[in-house]
Image 1 (cartoon, rainbow, N blue to C red):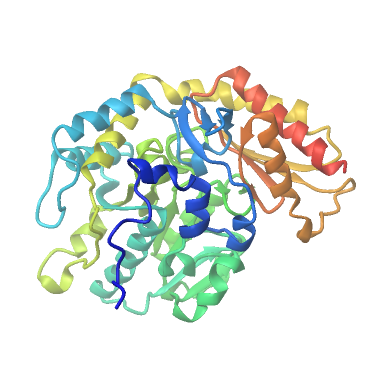
Image 2: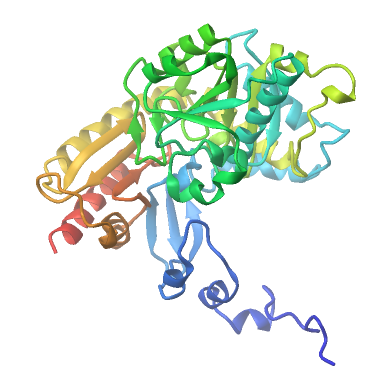
Length: 442
């Protein structure tokens, strides 16, 4: 009778066995990638990355590329940042992880205090740690629902989300999504949601049943970098105040400087009732997310066991992640990152305007701070046939010009680490210009 498990591993990362299969062979044989049609993937020749330094990544052939989407919008200060590396090493000298259920530790406590200090005193006063942007949103939704139950208003159970929104892929977060490919299959298992297209549309909703309004402030990321009209966020805050309901800000993408301020909400002078952060929280080094909320919400959960918030993850408050997040915030303060970023934002705008806007294949450039989306179409504004996957083709061609990035449909996303030099920015925009010409002319 054959053994259930092999006596020897199929592959070991050490010793002779490591020579028996390449990374690509192991990937094709065992991995399942996110947001990827695996039939196409297994027929492709994937890029194998082996090293990073500053704003660049190196493949196993020795070729360097600019990290044009900051490793899926997470990396802020570059790869192998000396300060972030050192923060991880210091914490490793103590411990890597310990349960956050019934215990605490200095990195998590200090990080919670530091995050609250980024907001006006007496506003956002409590931090709940989780693992990623989806779970940070999930926490906010469940806290909001339970708050209204504890407050004697269980009829407040419907959330409001905006068309084209993306808030993550856990079931609660996916309920809010306005991208059908991510949500439609699971519609029977989701929170009740009203979808609106504008702030004005909120006036038509039954306010007394709304648990909260969820929005990506200033710009929708997965909706092809769609920038909100100025003032919309403040309108939403005002409606929530009149309706007596919560405003939940999804700052997973926009937080930590991406729009030019530490948080996008600052640009319209408001504080939400919940804020979800992740991605740049650790500078792109470790998975960590946080949900910030008010003392009012926190106090409603105080009392007997029936008021406990029964939610959590094994890696909540992960010590390594909290330590590197603290150093990330120190870099912002001590290296004046936000001040330096203002010049980079202006340079990026100028480069996009001079190098890309004249192309007959660039339909629109949408920029919000250090976030840019370049939508490609045929001359005259006619969209390319969906089957051509022109955005993906342009991004693949950009590799030949030394740039790694990823599109959202036919919108090319450019979101560089803050450590990028002026020359590297010029090279990145030049790579997109060359790739657009190479693909769209043929």
